[in-house]
Image 1: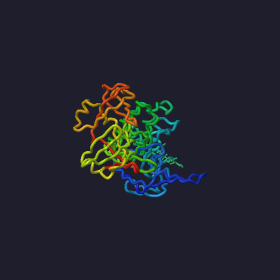
Image 2: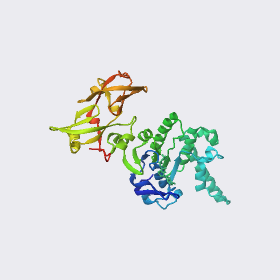
Image 3: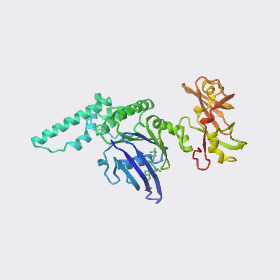
Image 4: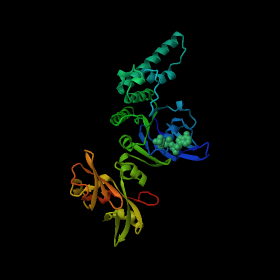
Length: 389
Ligand code: ATP
């Protein structure tokens, strides 16, 4: 196991034709702890794959430093970095069985060919025996023992994925690097394999950097999540902390489904209180919020509220709120999902989404009284989009 440290890491690509430079990764600083499962997440093109490829030694570093286990590896070849990679295309050798696919890398490293003398043959046999044990142990752990003799073409997507994982596991690397390894699986298998990967990480405790654009995968798998946008690391924290206290509007909107609602809001000072007018809502701020927003009085900010923080007035959740903010909103569309119901409400001018209990009295085309806890509100600067705290 090992720590992974990124210091002022930068990567630029030069387009050969247009001579234009793309800064794919910009000045990223990140300390990944020994044994940690860190998820790198962000929209397509934000630079997460480039960052992972630099860690893997598949891409050169433009500037900055990468340390694995305290050692600077900028100029260390990929094979000498003590890492194992799992990508979305599993890249299994089609002519080899599952067993051979898993054992191949170990054989290359440990069993030199052409050993003829008896002592060397004995050494070779011992090494092969060790490899056999390790392959079978990993296969048992991943529940693919029954597939060891099959060729990749005779496996399902999920089974191939396990073999690719098995091939990485047998190497006992200091760090696993995974790039969207579940993206070829169907929805059900993704959920199942996600849980298996988490179990595997708990068991092996190997430092893992996992790239995905799927925020649900990030929230459910990461011990910490590093959110990227346009090559810039926005925030790195535990899933719950990112959800509770996003540093900016991008992180707030990226994590959570459905996404956080945003409304333009006016901040005003009335006597000693600071008030917010956000679409259909008008409310006074608690002292802590008032303190943070006082300098915005007379100006507009962006108000954010998560769909699951908008309740139907009179519902058990709403009854638990000490000083609820309420408004009557027109229900445009109702989407039952089974476990809960998604409501599209006219928030004037913006549409608001609420995620309420499955049993709701909401009716399409009719008004609904909604309520939220003012302490669940988020505010962002309109220019910088940074959270106001
Ligand atoms: P995705 O989820 O779509 O894979 P990503 O977040 O992994 O996206 P990257 O693949 O790292 O994003 O790409 C980051 C940026 O760098 C993009 O603008 C991409 O076009 C650019 N880029 C990546 N590789 C190269 C390359 N070899 N040459 C030029 N530009 C590149």
